[in-house]
Amino acid sequence: MNDEKKYGFTTTILHSDRQKPIEHGSLHKPIHTSVAFGYRDARELAAVFQGRQPGYRYGRQGNPTVAALEDKINRMEQGNATICFSTGMAAIGAVVQALVREGDHIVSSAFLFGNTNSLWQTVNVQGADVSMVDATDVRNVEAALTAATRIVFVETIANPRTQVADLARIGQLCRERGILYIVDNTMTSPYLFQPKAVGASLVINALTKSIGGHGNALGGSVTDTGLYDWNRYPHIVESYKRYPVAQWGIAQIRAKGLRDFGASLGPEAAHHLAVGAETMALRVERECANALALAQMLDADERVAAVYYPGLASHPQHEISRELFRAFGGLLSFELKDGIDCFDYLNRLRVAIPASNLGDTRTLVIPVAHTIFYEMGAERRASMGIAESLIRVSVGIEDTEDLLEDFGQALGE
Ligand SMILES: *Cc1c(COP(=O)(O)O)cnc(C)c1O
Image 1 (cartoon, rainbow, N blue to C red):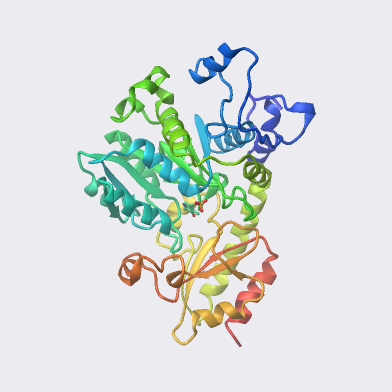
Image 2 (cartoon, rainbow, N blue to C red; image 1 turned 180 degrees about the vertical axis):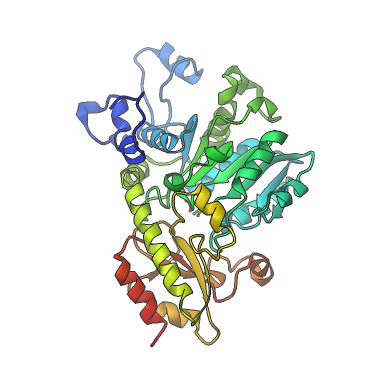
C-alpha cells in the first residue's frame, strides 16, 4: 500500500500501521508499556525536549502505541494532527483547559451529551460564559455571538433526542467570523461523517463509542482539521508560536491538555481501540441498518407515542441528515404511550441490555430521565425535549429479526 494513492475507509485504517516500520514485521502496532524513553546521546534527549527532533520522552506526553492510534483517527478525519486522551470527556476538557480563559464566551448547542452540559456549568463557574442555543438553526447561533465569542461547540446528532445541528451553515458563519468551530462527531463517527467537510476547526471523538466499538476501553481524541487560521486565536502562548501557524493550536492542546492536564490514554486501551477501529465501518453499517428497521417498526406501532431517529422521513432534520451523513446512525429514542411503564417495558426485553453506553456491539437501552439526565432536573430536561418516559436505544449488531422480535414482544400482545 502506498500512501499517495487514495484507498477506501477500511483499507486505509487496516493498513495504516504498516506505513511506518513495525518491529519484527508485527501486523499490529505492539503495546509499548515503557513510561520513559532513553537516548544514547544526551544531546538527542535535549533535542527531543526542545522540539527540534521527533521522539518520545515521557509517557504522559506521548507513546508509540497511542501515536499509531492517533494516526488512524487522523486518517479517518482527514486531519492535520490528532491527539488521543484517556476519555472523550478528557478530550473536551483538555481543549477547554488549553484554549478558554476568563471572560471568554462559548456558544454551545443546548442538545448535548449530559456530561458536556455539566462541563459547561463548571466553565461558567470558572469565569467564562456559555450560551446554550438550539443549534438546529444557524440563526440561533448567530444571535448568541458576542465580541468575546471564541468557540462554537456542537454535536452532529444529539443524544438522546437525535436533533441534528445546522452543521454546514454554522461552519460558514464561524469561518466568516474567525471563530473556532468544534464538532463532537461521536454520534456519527468518522465513517458516517467528516466534520471537516462543513468547516469544523477541531473534531472531537469519544473513541469509547463507535471507534472502539466493543465497550471494553475508554478513550477520546481531538483532531485539528487544518482549516482554522490560528493567527486569529488570541490565547496562543508565545512559546508555541515557534512552530508553523498550522500547528499552534494542536501544540498548545498537547502541552496544556496532555502534559499539564495529564489525561493521557494508556497503551493497552489504545491497542483495544485500534483493533476495534479496524471493523468500525462494518459494525456501523449493521448498526444503522438495525436502527432504521427498529425505528420503522416502533413508529408503526400505536402503543409507541413518539420515535426519534434521523432516518425517519418525519424527523425534522431528515433531509439535512441525508445530505450530510452516509447513514443515520445507531442511536434512536422513543416514548411509550401512557399506561406502559418504561421500567416494566425495559424489564421485558431479553436481548437488549439496560446499560449506559453507546456504540457497543450489543444493543443497550436506558431510561434517560431517571439515569443519565437525572441530575439536571425536570426543568432542564423539559427544555431539552426529554420526556420522563423516554427510552434511548444504542443499537448493536445483533441479527435484525432478533432485535425486532425483542422490542415487539416487550410491548405485549
Ligand atoms: C460518550 C460521549 C462523550 C464522552 O466520552 P467518554 O469516553 O465517555 O468520556 C462525549 N461526547 C459524546 C457525544 C458522547 O456520546
